[in-house]
Length: 158
Image (cartoon, rainbow, N blue to C red; front, side, top):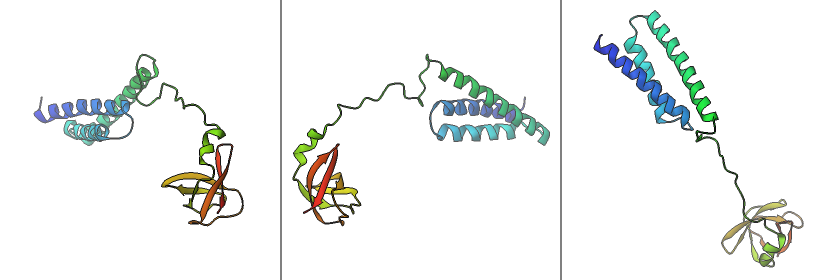
């Protein structure tokens, strides 16, 4: 067997392994790109003619399809943990009641954005989501938190 063909076969095997790793790891990164390069180089090194190159390319695509089917089959079983699927439930902390925000009442600040009626306000260096009680309030206007309504901080112009 010719050395070039042996190197081509090694590149094909390495390409399949790298593409298989890419199928398990989320995203498209170094293993996928390196695997594609190895597969293309392996096809060029092992093919003697254009017909042989086309045949090898078809075989590579069929093997990649089989590899993907096998990997997806393993990842769909509960025995193997998929890096793509989040298994545990995300649990938020205790829900915030309106009374939890009462300490902010009468706090003074400035409007960081225009309030039409929603926007942001700066209160002692902390930016909060706020809502205007009345009409439009321009950015930079002095404001005061007047009440808390369903976890919304309602402000009025000072």
